[in-house]
Image 1 (cartoon, rainbow, N blue to C red):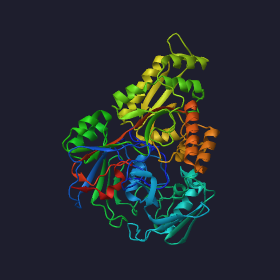
Image 2 (spheres, helix red, strand yellow; image 1 turned 90 degrees about the vertical axis):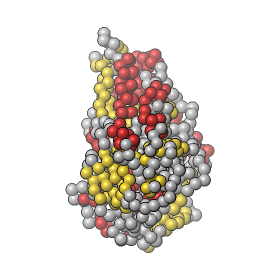
Image 3 (cartoon, rainbow, N blue to C red; image 1 turned 180 degrees about the vertical axis):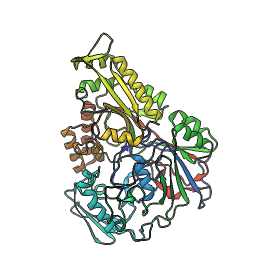
Image 4 (cartoon, rainbow, N blue to C red; image 1 turned 30 degrees about the vertical axis):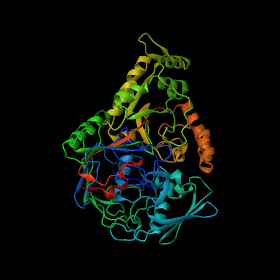
Length: 563
């Protein structure tokens, strides 16, 4: 699906193999962090590959319809209300995002996007962006610096509940001195200053300023945007059924080659894959078990890559629960999970083990962190140290209460997460821990996880990470409880180190700081860190213009075409 650019945000994904909005997307969903130009592999990333008879591109033509099959729907089109990847991918179709954008083959570098140029003041806190002169909203109104400033003012207002508002706290002023210029001033020099200054997905001031920012009942643009700036415009959205987008003739990169982009919501990935095989849809997510089968299909090209913004899977703890506040209990449960069978039998080799906050694809990766590998004997020992002992039925008891856990996963169509949860349930049972496993529809899952009464103990989930490690602070910060830091993990030393890393310009010293963050988080074990996941996508061979990079494939969707 379409890319997301602009200031990095961690995203939850709804399917396990793409992965830091909250991961609702699968590895087969090419949602990425941003767009394209070639030069080599990103440090810490690996070459991407293309497999299938459709990998050779044909002559470009315009017109035609693209059909995408998904198994979870968006929650909202409001860019300042959601944390999930599926909603971000819908928004990326209708809203142009980012003054700058990553280079697809060197994502740590930036190139112009909505800005034609930019400069950094000698004080290293003043960033000046000059907008492209051809920026237009889909209704023909110019996109100006006033749209950026007005949107910034709304996003920073604490009453408006922006989940990532902490990203804006270092911005002391955001000004629009003339219609084509945005000037952002930070409170101090930062290594991530350029990304920090590129903070806003602009909304059309001339439409939104007379509407309620928060209430969909009083602002129809939240669920049905009529004016956008992205490659497509929303024509129709029926929740949990389908969404239809049509080409935006005024998109600043040029009208997309495709006339429309349709998303069909299906009950599960098996049905989606069968529709892809039959040619009824052009792109679909599918389970790792079907990866090799997809590669053998004559009408499908499989693209795969190790994402620069890594996708990783985990089981997260709810640290509000007294029995999970004991680190020995958390370490014991982590020691009961064998990652290798999960990789081999559930993810079919399309993943690697991971043990802390940053995966091996990150330049800051620290391989020397505490690891809680599969060791049932050690798990029992740790539980004993925590005061848990087996009763006559072999179930663990402390102070007359059994150790019972409620584990959730979402969406309930995600078979990978369901199987991971089932493996955990079985292994915990062997220790004497009773686990109730429940799958929920994606929106219901997000609501249950991030809203009172927080009636859960563990969640099986995934994060889509960011390219620069700094932005991962969003899931470990006390300020982001509960929307991003849903397990309520608090470690002030970790928060201090993230702030030090943002201010450190020497790359080796930054690496040491993030290495220490990884060590502390691995010791605390607020998650059972499971795997970092390979990205992949299956696309019908009739679709051309796809170029796979460490950003995935969706970053240049306006260039896709029917062969």
